[in-house]
Image (cartoon, rainbow, N blue to C red):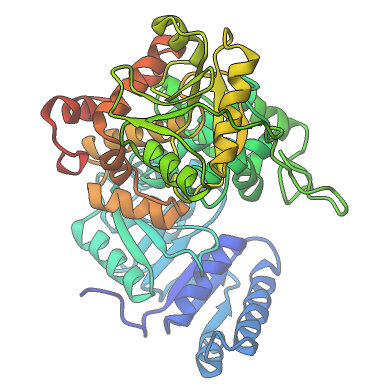
Length: 508
């Protein structure tokens, strides 16, 4: 292992939330730590905040008092860059601008020793570009922490074209010694997490702009059905709409305006209106004192139809069977139907979404009473299901479908009819981006899955999710989405290869 020895002095430049968090992590690992900021008193104020936070952890029994005091004894504010001349590692966490970062490292190179490692905490700017003007760019690498740095376990180790293997290995081993999980990434826009996570935000924002459902219902569906820790509206409100929009625009620009990364006009309107999320009091949701909690829109109670047939043994079909049986509701069963229907209830015929709208599927099948169900991570445990009806679907059939699902113990979230619905559309795009990321050599399949679980708390890594759903199904969903909504939904080459070969994306 080549982790830096605890006696090595570490400096963090930038005393904002992220910089202070990184300084705390390094100090708790036993390093002497300098914290520097160009703003007067910013570093000293950040250290005071760290002190208060560590003492709070000690009082709650979550941190050893002697460890906290040792860390605080080694934490100092630097008055000038020259104070950092004896450091063995310097991490910048300043404003997310290429010119500012490049200028800082140029100044540092004239101060520090030749063996001092330089690291950038950038979330989306290529490390190669940051180090392009350095005389010794091999010692610069990305050390990308996630906010809040003391609690989030993931660190992306990012190698630019000139980053030496020794630099990347030392940064990774040091992060591991600090109690973090390190994954390796090549320096491409967004690295792993900020690239692969774009569809989680982008598809949710498109669904809102298309008025498929409202923010509270979108968040509810993504949490309850998709198993995500937070929905896209509450998560971007937490991150800050301005920050999330800036990262989206950075990735979109870096990928030469690829349609799948196109920023949201709806999000930009929030930013322009100062509705930045929790930090401003309002974003998609209202966080001001006395504001009501977001409430999802669920269907009013309907009567369960007397005629119910469950088809096949798909996860949704099996869950419906078990849940109806538990509640003593009679139903018939058959083997899988040729048209892949999941259930019939009164007049209604229910299918799992395959990327077509319910309206198009009703037309293709010549079956007006067509309704679609969304992808669910665990249909046995889920308490809610999104339901979309074809425009030609009779109201009586819609009521029958709602009655069936409610009788099985689901709350029903009616959505406007949209290709791919909500969870399926989002997950398919996450899988597609993940497959393309691995295919382009940005990271390994194992590191990608790990990064998405630890960096953004996804319930499954996207490649694991593809194994569960099937590459063929994801390809079908994306192909149908592409036919209705354009090139942004084109299945990537790696996914197509997995479909044609029958191999897992893990083997790409």
